[in-house]
Amino acid sequence: MSDTQLFIPPKPGTKKRRFIMRLLTGVRICYLSNFIEKSYSMKMGQLRLPGRKIFMPNQFELVRKILVTEADKFPKSDMLDSILKLLIGNGLFVANGPEWKRQRRLIDPAFAHAKLKRVFPAMAAAASDLLIRLDTKADGSAIGIDEEMTHITADVIFRTIFSVTLKQGEAQKLFNAFNQFQDTAFAIGFIKALNWPNVFFFKQRKAKAAAREIRSLIKPFVLDRYKRHQNGEELAENDILTSLITATDPETGEGFSLEELIDQTAFLFLAGHETSASALSWALYLIANSPDVQERMHDEAVKAFGDKEPAYEDMTKLRFVRDVFQETLRLYPPVGFLPRQATQCEHMREKPIKPGDIMMISPWLIHRHTDYWDNPDVFDPDRYADGASRESLRQAYLPFSMGPRICTGAGFAKQEAMIVLASLVRRYRFEPVADHVPDPVGRLTIRSANGIRLKVHRR
Ligand code: HEM
Image 1: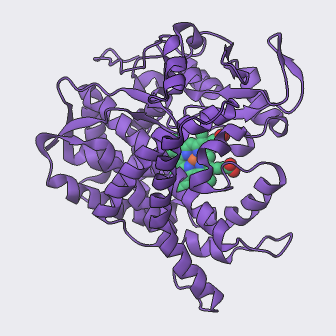
Image 2: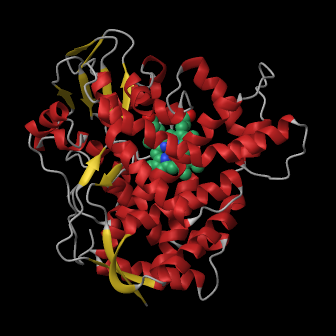
Image 3: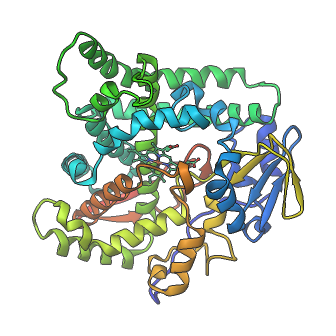
């Protein structure tokens, strides 16, 4: 740990009854507020809710068994399906077994399009547009940094999937619609997974409207390109969408249907921007409260880029920026829970597990677990310099999951984060806003219920 000022960022309260009260009342359901102090040292916890058993294994051997070595016995839980269906249909993220394998065969070639060197110019151009937007706001007044981060990350995904840039009005719409979707769909999905009757009709309507709004941003691009392809037109755009439209399954010779294409692009859009937006917002909040860290990042960025535009080759010079991002993903893993479902009877830590029980692996808990991390709640990007933390990284660090369902966009996300963070700290200084303390809530991603507001000063 460095001897400079260390920051302990906000963590939700640990009052046991809050979660059940929220489930019953439907008020801002957040799985993080269910954790009690003991959750952060338990080897395996159990969430005692009527309807369905939910276990929370934190012990590394159990986590590996569920996610890696016996992953086929623990498919993705139907909880995810209930939460996400409105938005991404039966897309890759929620599919299991042979259907997941079929979708991967079609999607994997699209990821060849997301090769890091190839997408670098799109990322750098989006970062440069972000600076133009922020220049008009960098006068020391407080701004909603989470909205800005949603705009840049959605823009990067628009440029790489569709070869178009995202407009200001669309970014705003998206931010609001996704907030609404998180608020409502998570509650409905949770209740469904517990086999409780759905009493949140009003939320269901809102979730549907939000999903429609998000899909309506994507659909016209897919439709236009799909029709051109069906009419035998040679597609000039060399991007992820063209790759998805032209992909055929080597086993069956079939491609994606139009509906499936919309589901898959909606999923890639969601997976590719919301997670990164969450991580970047928290990263900026953390460094705004750690001035020494921010200065070191600034110095590194100035040294790496000089007064030029960022280049692909500069990425390897940003080691400290990389550690800051790594530490951000530890404290605020955007995907804070990975629900799996048992398919057979067994025992774990002497507890009987039955088919249908949910095994909720939580990167949030594991990343702050006292068995694995020293001073787990402290923001300390220097912790990775010593050998002990390198072991923790190997054993207890899974912001991108692990095993066959590991995030295929991890390299993309890291590169994007390094370009954006280094470009921002080179040009601006971020400062906290007095009396504004973010309130972390865990739903689909970990966001702040009251936003993340920071003051931005041009250097
Ligand atoms: C900081 C940013 C990101 C984080 C923290 C993140 C995290 C994750 C996690 C935890 C999973 C697995 C969930 C599970 O096991 O249940 C996942 C899956 C996935 N992610 Fe990411 N992700 C990020 C960015 C991206 C980006 C930028 C893309 C695409 C451009 C992407 C594409 C995917 C895909 C395609 C899957 C599904 C893989 C499969 O099931 O076969 N992700 N991500």
